[in-house]
Length: 178
Figure 1: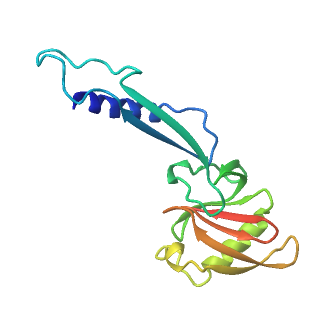
Figure 2 (figure 1 turned 45 degrees about the vertical axis):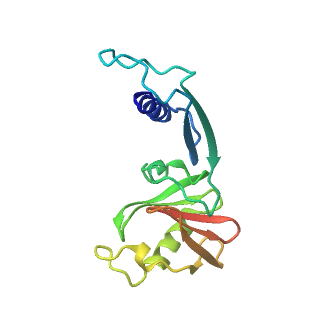
């Protein structure tokens, strides 16, 4: 029992020490207990430290795709104009501030900030900034006029986790908000 607890603690410690992961990647740590199920140490002795033979740890990395869930803790909160990675793709933060239950609005490298702002305006139309959460009124599709290309585009919007929503379409454009 003690060995199993130490094995689980070691797995969690290894998961917390993972460094250098690319943004938008999820690390999964799996621990396998290979130790005997019977406690062999005398009652007064402290538990033996866990060694490589006590637990096997497997680490896998997955990159999220456009429809995949993205960990909410991996979302950047940088100033407007910052180049960041959201949902595994390079993006620029275009709007920063509270309202409609959001803080950040950003576009991927195929999306201008003017288009992000136009998408924001289309999605918040008729909503109260202090009372309404945009997720509660999210439309599956939204028509957005681009001031840059002077064309209208249809975007499909979908939640990626409890915070992040991505609206995509229009020549590989993506507008992220959370």
